[in-house]
Length: 551
Image 1 (spheres, rainbow, N blue to C red):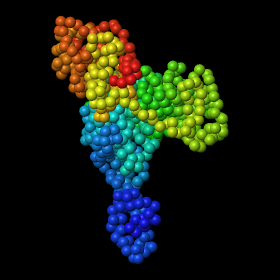
Image 2 (image 1 turned 135 degrees about the vertical axis):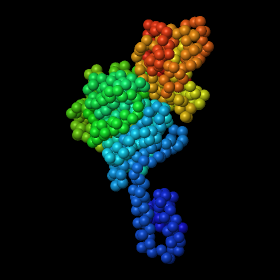
Image 3 (image 1 turned 120 degrees about the vertical axis):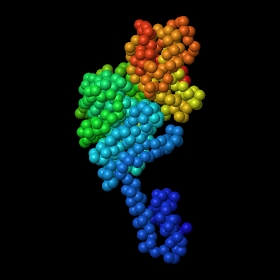
């Protein structure tokens, strides 16, 4: 058809390449061009103008102020996942708006913030957009739950202009944990964080040094002990990280505190902008999934369940690295395209490695590398760096260590087997609530397992709280059958692995991980603590995974 030729000449595109609105208008106007002799240059010009302008007009029209339910199709399992979005009136002019990502607690949903708090009214007044992802429900924002947050954010960006330097992450209870965990994983995305009534991965808090945390907790919280936030406060203070801690007298775990604290939260985050080019970076991680921040990346760190730490400080024309002598890794990568290195484009760069070794990157090489945004790569085979192409920054594949729904059916049981084999106890108490449900794909990867054991929280210290007890078989039979008087209502049923019949006349050596200790002591007051040392459970699990290579 002649109309197709006209479109190619005008737009440089075929009909199927046009936006949907333009294709619709094209279908209306196309008959005008069926008769070639009647086509005038003026008509062609008018059609060209309409086809060019309409897409930009319709994109502005999609910015509808107010709360709105939305959904996206997940790349993980191709299911539709819901989220709520609030768009402020300030977004109507098409200018970028700041975004607050609000994470819900255990047992809540993507709808809870909008239905149970005044977040929309507050956000309208402040001019913030608000994203409330579902996070797959009770996945503790780990694994696919965390991926859900990033996918929802990507979907929001398709239709709303977001100020990337003013993205704030807040959450309550499980959502507060998710706030800490996601921020420690990707601190370069956020300008500030506000975890409420939650607990934190204390060993990773150095990662959030530029996020100005505002920690809020009630001192009468029956669900999450206020000491957990006090510990986070003390840890940040020891690290010298700027933050603020608010402890609310007489307040429990109720979510009504969120609305009460929104004005305070607004005062804290207002005007804060993301740090993009810091001079000092610290990456602390137990998983290869969380290996990059700002201009620094660790590739292939082998932790054996221990924390991997790499630090780097840029001062004048020197870059100093800090990592343990026994840290095993494939490479440490420095993004020379980051604006932190712009002042060094015409200067030598001196690299200082642990142990005193140094290397100088000549000014000529630095200038060339910076202009093409290349990467400085330090390989594990000796303290020596080389210039590498930017492609090395692409994340590695997340290889499964267990495939199929049968292999992944009981993550908790698999982990219990690893612990039983190493500790030689008679049984280990576990609840699926300590970890995560099996992934929807039915596969578990090496990095998934890291995420699962991260959920164990305090199960990283030797025998914390005397975690091995002598328990009678009679107690085990009775209390495991009826858990309503001692198990927290929000936890799934506790099991003792291996699942066998107990002899009520005998006693058993039972290991109880710290997340279950307080409930266990309440339900089994006659259990006797044993003075037996237990290795770091995370290390036990990861050594087993690495040795077996599969589950």
